[in-house]
Length: 606
Ligand code: ACO
Ligand code: LMR
Image 1 (cartoon, rainbow, N blue to C red):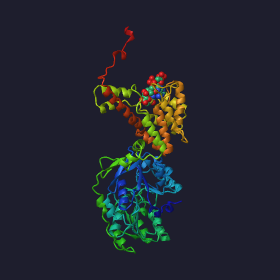
Image 2: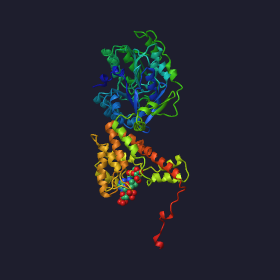
Image 3: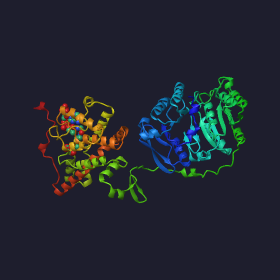
Image 4: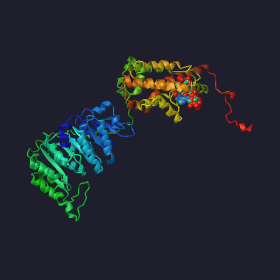
């Protein structure tokens, strides 16, 4: 299907939800300013495909918002995947084909998109054209600064990147002139001429100056003809190629009947003895009929109004039949309200002080303290959003109680007690104990979650997983204990696992138990420990009761979310050990010398 039928302007006048590949702050901010000035209640950009940070900060009006950054379209949350209907591909020319393919494969409701980069290899541009036709998604570019439909969508840098530029170009008031240009720079000049002539845009489109444009001028003309709000077309073309002869044919055949005002640049080439190559790939008149003058003549013969100089366009626009009509009231000049915005020094999504009343997750602190359990508040704050399921709340409540302490022999408790007996204060003694938490003691829950997630998502057999870790000479986080063994199991683990009993899938708990069955056969102390059990049950509860995707679970692992519960709970026990030592006041601790064996004995000396 030729993309002309695909390139349907009417579908650009809905509610755009855009994903941007790559990050150009000024372009994205200009799209959000357009949204705000057009009166939209929410930003059109819903996500950025990129690497590095998890989100980027922009302004929506004068309010700062966070736009999520995900490594690939497939990593978008399911809701966003279905919601996205347009894309702006800002990736480099050599990455355009691959990144666009990923978009088309992942986004089921795509209508169209813009490719910004120049230098897309011509063979890949042809592949993109075929992809367009096959997928029923139109694309504009490459080398396009985008498209704009006043009051509806701004997809790219088109029309400018500063709020005042958007207002001066009158991009916020729907009109009747369609601007079509092969040149990005000149599309903005043409837009300003239309605004200066007292008219308004129905839409504007920069086709890009590549030899094989993803949307050809003829397709854009047909789309203008089929678009009821469009009453006239203003076109900027260049020397090189034969597109304008196709446009002349559309006019002669009556396929396009709306008035066309146009300017074809490039007569300067006549001053050269050999045909010069201008900036755009196709801007070179290899033959006489590709010259600017020949194209102008063909368009004039077909009935277009051809400007001899670029500025003559303004005069021709004034003569268009339906006249500029009454100048709409000047924009209420809200653009100046968007100037002098300064990003805040911090961003916080979990709490704020709303006029003196502290809110957690948007809810009044005092109300939460009175109505919610401590476990619900802890889990919701740690996750950064309200917990939905009673099962998760109950599990967190149990874990917070269970982990408070495990006796005075545990390394963390010992460090707190020693520090307290050295006369240090509460915070220092607590910190000494907390600093003991790590990969071997209490801080393995996160690594265990990563291990169970890796094993399940990669569909590894437990046996293969265990062998793989052994081959890499890595301890399996969540497995092993100094005190407990197969014949003397940790009573806490059995209670923790019960919280998975009611879950339909138990993907992660099942995997952890299967791993333990292998490791415990190797050595009796290689049992599933509390860290491993908490990690497994928490993954299952988040997946099955809080609808976390595997990608979202992976993000929690990256944040080290899974270690938080042990730290929080054990802080209670360590504090209690500090206070207990202060009460007992036994003075400075010194290890008896027979409790340290000489490790530097050189048997050869004896
Ligand atoms: N995965 C694979 N092999 C292991 C593991 C493990 N997690 N733990 C011990 N082993 C093996 C060792 O390779 C060693 O084998 P080898 O004799 O062939 O060399 C043998 O078991 C003994 O190793 P040690 O380090 O002496 O065992 P220890 O009993 O000291 O280990 C510990 C206990 C520290 C918990 C260990 O199992 C471990 O680091 N586990 C992973 C981290 C973890 O889950 N920690 C949380 C513990 S529970 C809590 O802190 C609340
Ligand atoms: C704990 O909860 O502290 C323990 O599992 C670690 C230990 O050594 O007992």
